[in-house]
Image: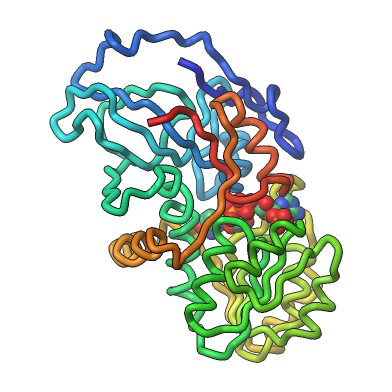
Length: 338
Ligand code: NDP
């Protein structure tokens, strides 16, 4: 029963094989292991997300997410198939999404943190941790709640090729906005154009300030990175602009040490700044999300891309790639076939 153990708290970027280690010492016989009224999950897909870096901290430091504990398995969003069950509400063949330990096989007693997947459109299981999972909900729900988008307005989306940013771009286009997207490679720029961005650029080779000066002012900024990009967006904002503060990944591995110089623009331009954590919006928009998004994904009207790492032992590499920005799209670890 292979698993990923959180081995040490990183300083700076997490190191595969040091911060996290792949461990095979936990052997179970999946045919005979005692379930005690619970059920046995075979892990199929694991989601690798930016917020996981924030969980790699000393447990005494408070944050919105639980810390990882040294010596214990990592966990995160995933999809698993039930292969044995003694639980009255769980049947063999059920597929569940939600929090899973990073293990090949998991014994559970209840459904806490998990939900049964209703896959009526027969979509790949990985979509339930991507465009139909936490990242998709993030884009859909926060766009609905905070954008106050009006046709003809201009939005700037950073990290526009990732799972969150790419859905925001598509939602904004569906609302009739002009979309400017930035990302860190030419391949990602190509994808942003394919999904409808009017202006798409590689911020590593083109200056964000110059693009925003030419294509702005911006009415909405969807912030995934913070730092210099946020500063550029503050300068390029229109009066009554809306800043949706989704993430600040440029600070996740350096103690959030990037200073913002143009914060006074919030006052000068009467900006609204909305920070959020997705789980606080789920009660309001959950039903609507599951009614609206799956058919659009099934018909191909909403597009998504994935960067698949094969094998549980690749978790550490995938985590580092997401933190460095070398992942090509939504990072998924494919653990096992269904
Ligand atoms: P991705 O899978 O797209 O991975 C992260 C990406 O961040 C990288 O690929 C990279 O893309 C980009 N990036 C930009 N600047 C940097 C930098 N300085 N260093 C490293 N990477 C950088 O991420 P998601 O779409 O899953 O998440 C996007 C943002 O949304 C993150 O900030 C995340 O924390 C946030 N988030 C917030 C939630 C909330 O509840 N508030 C919920 C879910 C996500 P590029 O090549 O374009 O630079």
